[in-house]
Image (tube, rainbow over all chains, first blue to last red; front, side):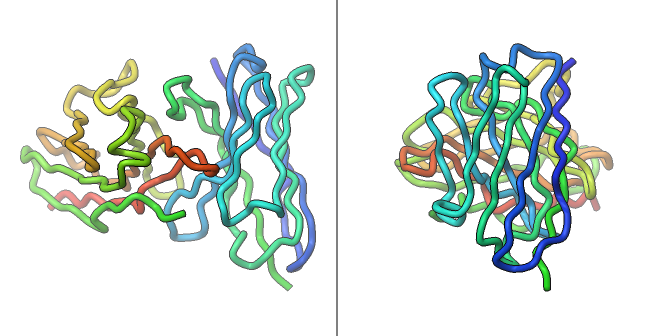
Amino acid sequence: QVQLVESGGGVVQPGGSLRLSCAASGLTFSNYGMHWVRQAPGKGLEWVAFVRSSRNDKYYADSVKGRFTISRDNSKNSLYLQMNSLRAEDTAIYYCAKDGSKWDIDYWGQGTLVTVSS
Amino acid sequence: QSALTQPASVSGSPGQSITISCTGTTSDVGGYNYVSWYQQYPGKVPQPLIYEVTNRPSGVSNRFSGSKSGNTASLTISGLQVEDEADYYCYSYRSSSALFVFGTGTKVTVL
């Protein structure tokens, strides 16, 4: 079955950087677009970024554009999110998620917590 | 970019039907049949309920159904059960540089 396992979360100071990783298994990773979605404590879901399966086109929410970079390594079945210039409002659980090919999300990872605090 | 608009809360008694609305624009909900819905229990990962407005993934109860009219999509839960008490989110493809958007979320309470 499809498994998505995030890592790399932690506590970082405002203005700092962090790189999240997502290891995928149980699927032909290179065939699917992948998302990052986040959820601040006690708040709703927010779509963050998307990368297409092989054309490497990337899309971002306005709230992170210019600060976050999504990337993938199909040879390693891995998805990444490089987060720079972090702000307190970036504090959230970050989920790696697989695109269902109907512009939906059909699998989610368990999430990794990022806390931006001094 | 702004989130899709959902009611903050909806409630109903066991056995009743409730409907959660999700209002967007012609650039998202109204322009494409790419609306999906997710159920999330506190502290848990969201789970898919509906994709492409009306379709249920394998294993999802047929008590959950989706529809759309104009710029508003809806999720209906029939025969409401205690286990349906959770948060629900709509999600849509959007024709902008930010390609996707979630709804604001609705907390369902079973009275």
